[in-house]
Image: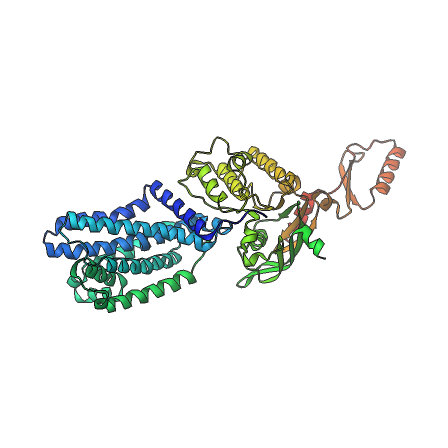
Length: 249
Length: 287
């Protein structure tokens, strides 16, 4: 055959562009997922008028945004694609699995980046939070958060039996974890203990250091350790349980 | 040796597939020549889909040797996936994209795809190019499945129960499309539980039950394979009588001469061979 097969990078880019187009066309779940952290930002900032509280809540919402755009979005998305049979269809084409999954992940990560920018800008313009102290550190923690929560989202998708059940599974984790993690310092001790063991609180600590307090990566080694550990667990479970097919009832 | 296998699109020897304790496929052998339409016919749960999914690269076999276009499908080589088109039993598609967008996207995955507009035409989707796929009817979605299987201009096409749930007119159209694939020299592996579909489309048919092939051959020959003929007539008192024989000539001679001797006519005399349906029902009946 004289024709060359399309390359991996070109195929990944192609898939990414398709996912972006579909994201903007889908008015319901995906978009709500995207709006939720911004909505929370506005509501919290309206309730919490003290600057010290706002300095806590803005990095907290940023952490929530990472969770919503990667963990929740990918869990929904992978269950939907699996149950619809789209994963299976794609598997029958020459598209390399890696290019396909990177395209999907790229779409989620684009949303994360957009959210972090929106939250940072809104924090500065409307809520009196200074510009991030260390943009490099901010990027570092966002990337780590993305890896951690994207892998956990895909791993969770394996445990969700049907698309109908996805909302329950995702929110049963998302809402309590957000609740106890975005301002863990004020949690009662038993909730604080749980938050310490989960990754979101540590992501928020890292983001808070980068955005507000100026604590460096070296000051958050414990946070780093917990995040890396959860990321390793996430990747192991995401890869191990991966299924291209719908579950039979 | 090499030349022979080159002419085979699919070769299956001793294929077995177990799911835990259950063996869905229990030693299947068949081969499909290039340009042939081959039908796997059998009741639901016979192992047809499992067999096809092994050939498509979706499942790993438990035992046996399988070659598809010279490749082992289990290794899922991209070179194979570029030359194969698959219509699965039920698969979703991006709901918020139009028919043309979906086909254009999938065309971009192949080294030498078919023209999108022409594929829309072949699949019978003209006028629906700009409709979002979620607005398509069941039959139209099935045509989109077919269009997606054809978009890479494959040499080999797997059709797993392609007309299940179709109304008669839609079935006829789908049959015409499948015939046109054959006319283009494509190899088609078709599974169906419709006898008439196998009879209408397949050059050769294998009847599958309980994970085994019971009989294989051209649909027209399968009926005749037992060598039996059924001779039926009305006797003097008008009762329909029938008898099966390997030698219809002798039987007819006896019947007609006896009738002539009695001065009777043999009303309603017919000689038939068992149809594919007779063979199928006999073979797949539960013991």
